[in-house]
Length: 231
Image (cartoon, rainbow, N blue to C red):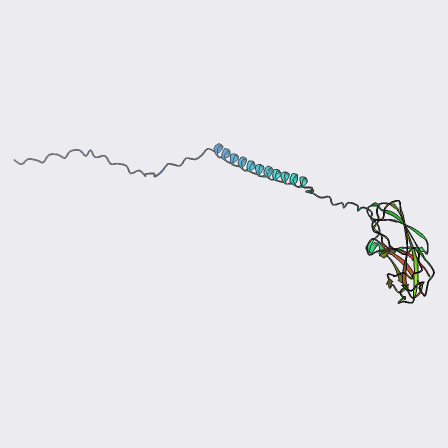
């Protein structure tokens, strides 16, 4: 008698369901309110940084302004130029208005440098063709012109010498004073830095061809401020 094979056992194998495996942390959708909060926080930080940079720039500018003021410089100089102090005519201004024109023997009041005030009087005497003694040098231009100079100092210490006076011919040529003719009793020279309250007087001699010209006063350096007309 043939044995029948044992009936197979019931299939107890459970089929595993294949599910997708996720690698990493699962993404979760952020709430809308949280996103808005993050955006607002970033905007606040940006504004705070901008304000900090602005205040830092203002502080640096203020420090620079204080430094400039302490050093005597204005950080924002005014566009309005200050009116210059009035000065005595000289240079191009003097050339435009011309020197003071005076007659022979006339007095002229001058306001000089460093508060000096003094009066100048120039008087040309009679023209001489020959000298009065053996020591007189013969004039190269033909004649002697003795000229009396008188300076009265009212204030200050003007720097005036007899070399500041020249004879100017009509063509503009200037002749300096020469040696005396031996006829002048008060022939001499001025001393620089004249003293206030005193009057200085001397006679100088010009070597000239004639009296057609002017005696000019050059003061303080190169400007002719006054002329005494002779002929």
